[in-house]
Image 1 (cartoon, rainbow, N blue to C red):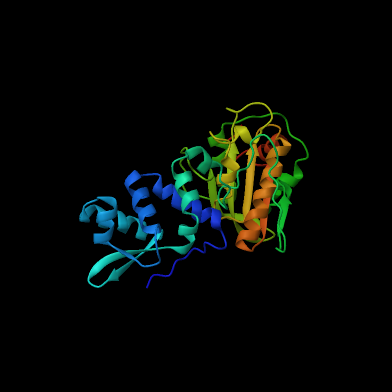
Image 2 (cartoon, one colour; image 1 turned 120 degrees about the vertical axis):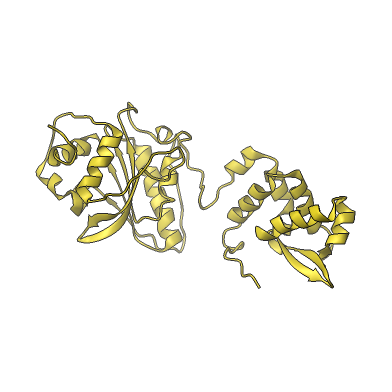
Length: 294
């Protein structure tokens, strides 16, 4: 017997979004799902489903397997014949699932744990009742790996490329891995070598180079303004956003909100912080060798 790893009662929107995402791929799959969910509690055999859907036996078994593999229905046996049994949760939410499966915009707007629908123009607010939130804001001065920066109170303007800055940070912390940029990455640098209070803490960085200008807002972070959200999908405990200029308040507020979400969801301490233009210049001045500066 296969035991589901997800609990629909604890995160219903995630389960609904999962089902709609699976079903949006195929009208035949939606028809099969709807047919299995209709009627009484008894499982429907492949022969019964052939009659109800007018699909061939091979097609019924193909579609049934896909639904069962995604845990939208339960595969069983009736006599010597393969049969499919409805899932109580998905049957109860059948109409909503089918509606979302054929309406991409509505599906995209459905708030879930991994997509709480942060606004790119305003703060994201998360209210948590009866849960312990353990989050703390940190700066470059708190990070042991950047200890030399404490000796630099101010530094002259100096701008380097995003890749050069990332490489410099890798040299400072001793991270020799290779990190290739691509459109859907959750972070620009993921490492276990950052030191905080004498301990190595898993850290995810997002860097924004000089190709971006003006005050940094969530809308400028990622093609869809979702880079902070994707950053917090990384399996890290420290989350850092770096930019060569001023960072807007909305970025800070979103990071605080997603840190709260991760802390509650994962039951652990989360640290988050910003490295703005001033702290970027301090890092460059404190570690000229690592950043290959003259």
